[in-house]
Amino acid sequence: MNDEGSTLALIGVGVMGETLLAGLLKAGWSADRIVATDRRETRRAELVELHGVRTAENPEAVAEADTVVLVVKPQDVADVLDEISDSVRPGTLVVSLCAGVPTDLIEQRLPAQTPVVRVMPNTPAQVGEGMAAVSGGRSAAPEHLERVTSMMGAVGRAVVVPENYQDAVTAISGSGPAYLFFVVEAMIEAGVHLGLPRDTATELVVQTMLGSATLLRESGTHPTVLRENVTSPGGTTAAAVRELEDHKVRAAFITAMEAARDRSRALAETARQQHG
Image 1 (cartoon, rainbow, N blue to C red):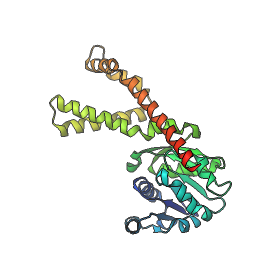
Image 2: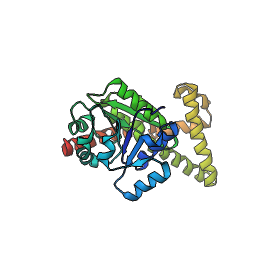
Image 3: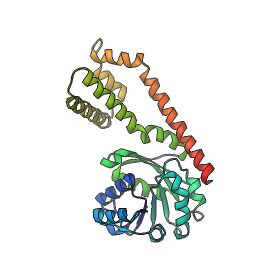
Image 4: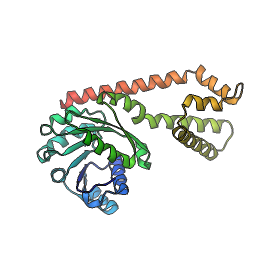
């Protein structure tokens, strides 16, 4: 990834903001091309010391940027946009990593025809294995989507989807790490219940999860086939899978993700009522 000739303003450098910042620097962005902002002076000083980037107030940072990345709490988006709107230059790309905030609400508070791209990242970005979904607003062109996809590639993978998929994306990959951690917790507790030391159970489960995910991605084999390869007729895995089916675990996952999607929709509607 190359940042030659461009300047990026990163508005809000919490966990995800710093994750993206570190990923971009590792991917080849030079620190003097990135301007970071944060409300706290101590935090700004910390960013300079840790990453060598410049810091500034929001309007000042935006005024010199070709790309502005918003990583603030959804309830703070409107105030931040009102603060920076007059500083956004024609052609500046505005990227939002603010959960549940539709592109049209952002566009309303920016100069006409400002390209806006919405991103739903997830927490594995912290280890360079994130999954992000990228959606363009009304004025976003293919080159804007390509720029954002490349940017998010610094912390994992990214796909372009229509914005009306974002609620489903939130339910699947945005919230997805929590479901997997939930399963890991349950498997570790089962290991302890079966008599294993907790540290042994933890190592067994974590490596099994990592290895299974790697096998799934690298083999290109359908998960049903991979599951069947482990499940010998009348064997131990078959007995376990029968219990999972009897307890309707598959149906529970579908219902849970529907609930997450519905909650994402509700949050977007709340954002419209507050900021629209």
